[in-house]
Length: 154
Image (cartoon, rainbow, N blue to C red; front, side, top):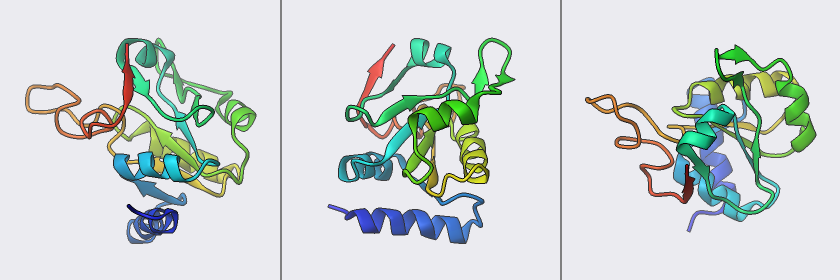
């Protein structure tokens, strides 16, 4: 089993190697393990409410999951209340892992959170559903679901 220190060190290595403008990045399995080892850590799902309703969400410990939309559905309009909603559920010194469908919006959320003073903002690599395969389907090549981590379907 990986230690908490090793998980944070790996995320920090990615921060340095990739010159990330936030604390670091974690693979789905690392993020799941971190959430089990660090009761302070929070997973913030930045997908739309519709995505949660139609696709599902990660199944993790009580109180460790929060949903704060990065963009609104329909239309993909930016959520002007993102930071206020984030602050309402996560303290700025809390380790926070941002998750979206395929790790695009989560990166943007981690950047914005860092700019707003969140000192431990991490991107969850691969996202919930991951990249598309050759036929345009998700959950088949990468992501939280593909990695066999627990989730609740729609």
